[in-house]
Amino acid sequence: MGLEMESMAGSIGVSVPVLRFLLCYVATIPVSVLWRFVPGPVAKHIYAAASGAILSYLSFGFSSNLHFLVPMSLGYASMLFFRAHCGIITFLLGFGYLIGCHMYYMSGDAWKEGGIDATGALMVLTLKVISCAINYNDGMLKEEGLRESQKKNRLIKLPSLIEYFGYCLSCGSHFAGPVYEMKDYLDCTESKGIWSPSEKGLSPSPFGAAVRALLQAAFCMALYLYLVPQFPWTRFTEPIYQEWGFWKRLSYQYMSGFTARWKYYFIWSISETSIILSGLGFSGWTDSSPPKPKWDRAKNVDILGVEFAKSAVQLPLVWNIQVSTWLRHYVYERLVKPGKKAGFFQLLATQTVSAVWHGLYPGYIIFFVQSALMIAGSRVIYRWQQSVPQGMDVVKNILVFLNFAYTVLVLNYSCVGFIVLSLRETLASYGSVYYIGTVLPFVLILLGKIIKPARPVKKVRKEE
Image 1: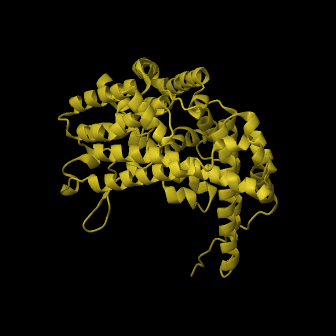
Image 2: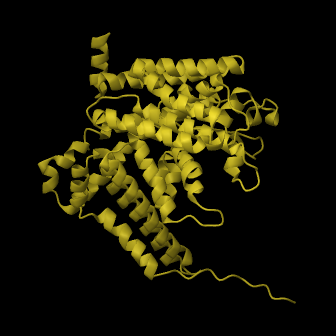
Image 3: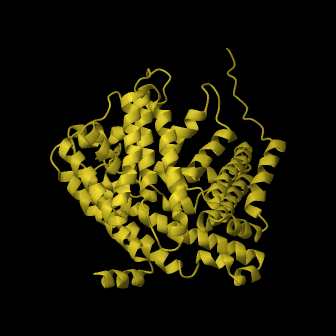
C-alpha cells in the first residue's frame, strides 16, 4: 500500500502526506451525501462530528483532534460561564492558540517542502468558534440598533454540546471552508427556515449544481498541474530570474500568481461540491417562474470575477468569499463607531487580522498590508471614474480600463509575498520590479488627496 501511495503521489507531483490529505478531502463528497440522509437532528450532529474527526485523524494523525478540542473547549466554556463577554474572550483565546500553532508548526515552510499538518483546518475551526460565541453574545442585545447580519445570525439559546461539535467538525467545510454560521447549520439540520419542506412547496435537488462544481474542480486541478512545472515559485531565487528584464520579471510575477490561484480554485470547488450535496449550500429560491434553487452559501470563489476584476474593491467579494464575509461582519463592521463611516484604519486592521489568521510569515503580513493599499488606490480611481460628467464615455472607459490594469498588476505583484513567504525573498522579488506595486498605490492615494473629484450635484425640487 505504501509503494502504491508513493507511486500515485509521484505521478501527480505531490508528497505522500499531501496525497493522503487530498484523498480524505475528496472523501468529504460521499460523506456529505450520506449526511443528507441521516435521520433526525441528533443523529446528524453525531455523524457530522464523528466523520470530521475520523477524516482529520486519517489526514493529519491523532494530535489534530486534540488541537481542535482546545479552541472548541475554550469557546464553549466562555459561552457557558461568561456570556456577556464571550465574544471577545473567544476571539482573543482562539486567535492566541492559532498563532501559537502557527509559530510551532511553521506550516508555510512545511507546505513548500511537500508536508502538511492540521493548521489549515484549525484556521477554519477558529473562525467558526469565534462567530458562534459572538452571535451568542449578540443574543443578549436588543434588536434595535443591530445590523441585519447580527439580527439574522444571533443565538438566543446556547447550542448543546453535540450541536456545537457537529457544527465545528462538519467535514464538508472542516478542512478548508467555506465558513458558515451556527444558525444556518442548525436550521438546515432541523429543516427550518429556507430548508423547511413547506418553503415554496419544493425540495431542491443539489445534483446539477454539484456536478458543475465537481467539473470545475477537475478543470482547475488539470490546469494547475499543467502550469506549475512551467512557473515554479523557486524561480524567483534562481540566477536566470535576475538576468531577465523588467517586463519579463513582471510577466513572470503575473503568471506565478495566476498559477498559484488555481490550486485554491480546486480546493474550494471540492468544498463547494461537498456542501451542496449535504444540502447546507442551499441559499433560497430565485424569483423566476418556476423558481430555481440557489446554492450560493457553498460558493467560496468566483473565478472569472477574480481574474477579470474591474476594481481591487471587488476582490474580497469574489475571492475566499465566506472568509471575506466573516472578516466584514466580525472585524470590519465592529470597528466602526455608530454614526461614523469606515476608513483606512478599519480596512488596514481587517487585513492585518486576515494576515495573522493565515500565519506569521513576513510574506503574509506584507501581502495583506499591500492589499489594503491596493484597495485604497483602486477606490481613488473609482471616485475619479464616478465623477466623469455624462457624455464623456471615452474618459470613463479609460478610467475603467486603468482600474482593471492597476488591479491585475498590483494583485499579482503582491501575490509573490503570499507564495514565497520569507522576508528576504519577498523584498527581493518586489525590488526586482522596482517596487512598482507598492509605489503605485501610494501615488494614487496621494493624488486622491490633491485631485479631489467634484461631489455629485443634488437636485433641488422647486416649490410650486
